[in-house]
Length: 258
Image (cartoon, rainbow, N blue to C red; front, side, top):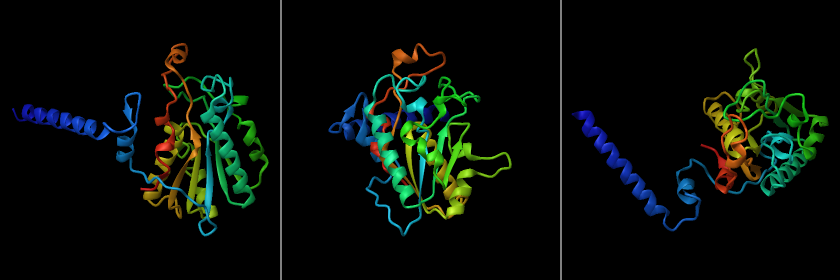
């Protein structure tokens, strides 16, 4: 009897929440069936402009800016035609990388997935040892730069993928070695690999495992996601559709710092 009453109350509460959200979103911009502004209000983020200054030791993290995600026709998840969002991300990331090199700031790069480990619901991608897993042409020069840490991760989350067999972590060691207080994160895909890395880095920071790291900053202008429409995904065994819409871009949030 008690459980039945509780269920009824829960249903009424859910309906009330839905109605309140509808009221709040009536005058908001809607893309498809998703109201952007209400989502932004619910996100635990600070949106602001960021100026990098010498007083704070900052490192640059480039996530998965490789051919199979960015170069036309390079693989299952690569754009089929020129993609403005991805091109902007590559250009901005390359410019940032050169800026960090000129300032001799430490930086780290996670250039690829290892597809030997299945990653459902994503089709095989970034095959190790092929051009798919290489950095895009605009960033290949990084491999010859001094003081650049390259990490080929074997899972979606670049933080988890930085663990070595002995329990050490390449990202954590990089932060401690260079006494990095803030990391600027850019790359692809905003809603998957970038998000996973940022969330894990923040959790590790909150637990005191990545000292002296304080801030994790995501630059919206240098982030993008891939476009896998429904009609394309249907022809790829095991793949789920992943349409590229504005909501997936991190234009809705710039700084994750809580």
